[in-house]
Length: 71
Image (cartoon, rainbow, N blue to C red; front, side, top):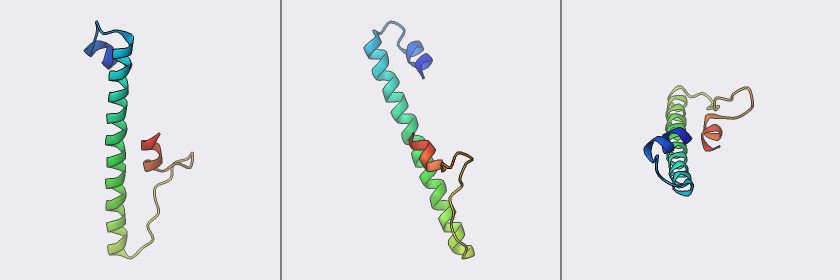
């Protein structure tokens, strides 16, 4: 992300690059969060039709996709 902000704003001062970087990070997190929620909703729909328990995918570190996308 730092590289992107520096390439897009090569002559900007540090604080402007920092603001651009923060905006990019916020956008990335929002996109990942929405994707994780949509995936969870699809999983819930699927488990309801099959009448099985809905368990979120858990990674080796104990996090779920939704948890990881928020970090």
